Length: 499
Image 1 (cartoon, rainbow, N blue to C red):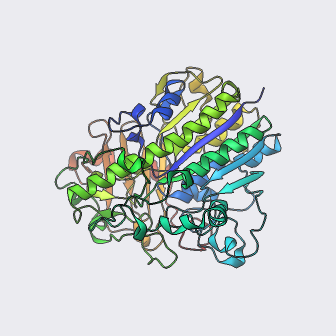
Image 2 (image 1 turned 45 degrees about the vertical axis):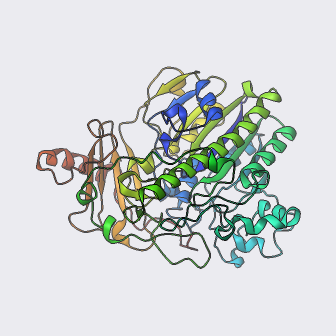
Image 3 (image 1 turned 90 degrees about the vertical axis):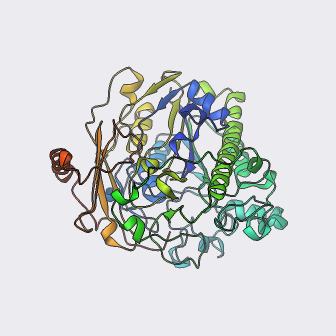
């Protein structure tokens, strides 16, 4: 019997944000319960710390250089095998709810991309519900907090049913904030009942109640991606902080672009062109403001946990839980003050590339953890094997099924890659082994590079790239990286839009 598949995804959520991952300040009871009845992965990486590249990897099992969406604002290569399409071809009822971000949100109207704002301001969207990359039907939320009212099924519903709520997403309507030195932190005036996270759960539940097993549903929230703007009561659930630790002088040991080339990214059609991720120094923010942003992020995470908990409760109520493989993960992480930074950006610190990954369901051992070197590359081959579907010949990932049977993964190293949108010098590629992470900048300045001892320094505070005592280790890893994952700065489809 083929299992159902429920894939729950967040946007820009740190791996250490859940109670089951050791976050004492978290209130995530539903995802913690999912981990208790499943397998928690403690060493799971995405090969790219930006939304679209990571999400493209999740449904193709390919590195971004091979699926083409190397940055936001690009599209996937034509002719690829997509996970939902392969499942649909095998008889699965496929549906997606929320933010998919598989096409540029700011693409021009003539592209006709359903996941662009322009599609929804034209006449094309009338009655459209799919298909989309193999999903038979979709319920879209487009963008993050400030774009969700401009396009997608949620925006159309809000404008038609509750137009008075549309301006409440803007910071000008905030019940508290924005903060003077952190303009992305405020308490949203949107009622919880009308918030997109509530709507996402409502639409996911509606699909479960009509689904024809076997089914596959992807449920994806835009949160806790910045801006940090949850509604009440979630905004008031957590106090400020605590502030993360960063070592004095650690940024001085990193490539100096981190200090020289920072700009704040902002969500909006007229936003200035800045490098991907909007990596921002926290030195211009007060501890109180940063602590408040962290508390608001915890509130966003708690609201998402509540929404996903409603979906999981419906799965159980309908008697589907025992026949459904459930995955929870995020596309990538967030600095959230670590290393003295906010948001995300070019350096592939584990804050950005390591994400939560939980699997539960038939055949998956309950209440267990693993440090196996897993990756978002493995989602597609794992789910296809569990569904009894032949794997495409072109895959970079591997099935995680051996872990369910007490065996290990045959993987010696994982590879990461960041493609810049503006400054080509920031292109970097990395090798990650059990004990080390090496990052090279082949287009960058001569002294740029990163080397971290993951056993002695698991949070990556001390860059050893220029340490003479680590020269042999650095050169050995560089040789392995160049041989197995050579630099590909020109990879990717054509840039269509900013994101």
